[in-house]
Amino acid sequence: MTPAPHPAPPDDGPVNAMAIAAFALSVLAVFVTPAALAGVVCGHLARHQIRRRGERGDSWALAALIIGYLLIGLTAAGFVLFGGFVATFFGIMAGAG
Image 1 (cartoon, rainbow, N blue to C red):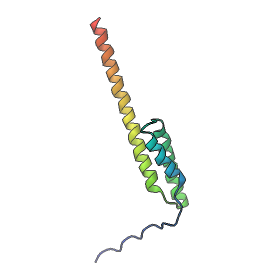
Image 2: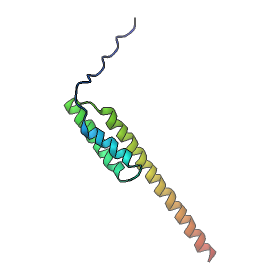
Image 3: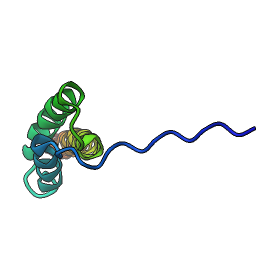
Image 4: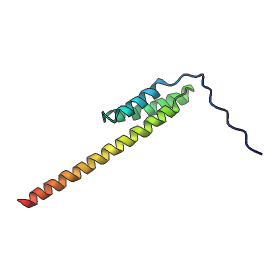
């Protein structure tokens, strides 16, 4: 006996506008890094609104959070690597003199 399939969510509700904005900001963060933080904040706010209001768009908000956090992590790793390169370069330059 197979279990009954879960009913699909209704497609008649509105899509949360903040979820779409969060996704757009997170994608924009590829070119403008600070937009990732705005995308993450809007993504969390959108997920809260979606649960409270029963709107659609949770997948947009979740995608915004994943992309935003990924880009924030990559940016932080880039700063750490750049700092290591600079420290190594100046350490080599100080030893050469």
